[in-house]
Image 1 (tube, rainbow, N blue to C red):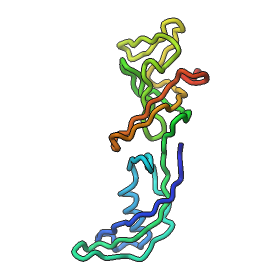
Image 2 (spheres, rainbow, N blue to C red):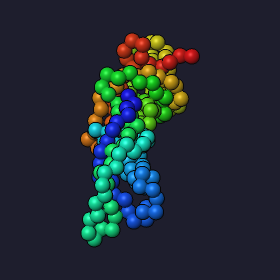
Image 3 (tube, rainbow, N blue to C red):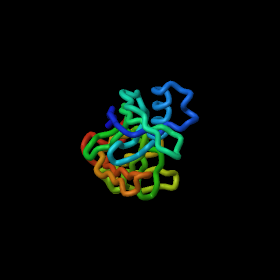
Image 4 (cartoon, rainbow, N blue to C red):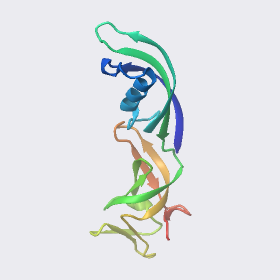
Amino acid sequence: MFYKLTVTDHIRIPPEKFSYDLEEAVLRQVKEEYEGHISKNLGNVIDILDVKGIGDGTIIPGDGATFYESTFTVLSFIPEQKEVVYGIVRDIADFGAFLSIGPTQGMVHISQTMDDFVSFSKEKVLTGKESEQTLKVGDHCKARIISISYKNPNNPKTGMTMRQETLGKIEK
């Protein structure tokens, strides 16, 4: 799910950004620090939309930079349990399919791709034994998020299923 979040943080403005207008300097620094950031609380930060407020600056002796308590708006993608998402198959391995969902990627285990016995071919195609349904790179799919792990904050894991009714490959 995409969210607009309001965040307050102390932003360090280095001396090389003193020539900018204060709001521009804070916006540039916030973009450097937050865009692409991944965390359990903020999800995948996509963009910084604006700076809502900047408090008084503080100078720390020996640093040379100023620190401003700033409030800004973040556009973020936070996957949620049980959420139904649209994705595109980016890769297929012998253990499942990797789907691009928004700015991130999730995995559908081979047992969760369809209601059938599924086999993997060297051409990176998953095929149902009885239904003869196929899943290959580039297919558009609908999946439900069933697990999210932030054990490694730089590489969160999202597990999905396509075995429920209305889920799976979207036929044209």
